[in-house]
Length: 85
Image (tube, rainbow, N blue to C red; front, top):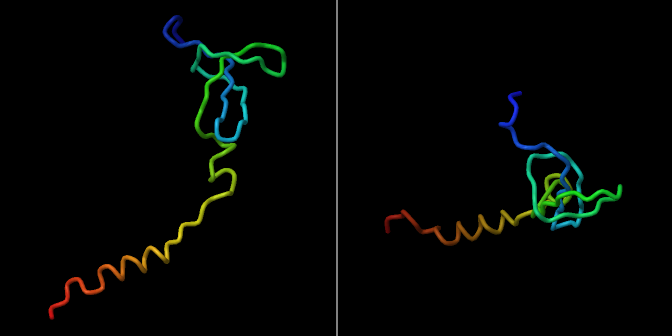
């Protein structure tokens, strides 16, 4: 890699606001906000709205939509549409 053209790649804590879970990982993202981690070191922290700890795809807690009810409403609304009478 060329020197002085790439951003710094360091440790960052990602804080999932939905579940309260925190992840320590490496990233080029940074923040002015910091947090003291379990190892006693201070790292920048980035708040995220959703992560694998709270996303329904990863947690298996998906909401089931009432698609049958929606289809029935559609059929009721347009049952006479396009008929010649």
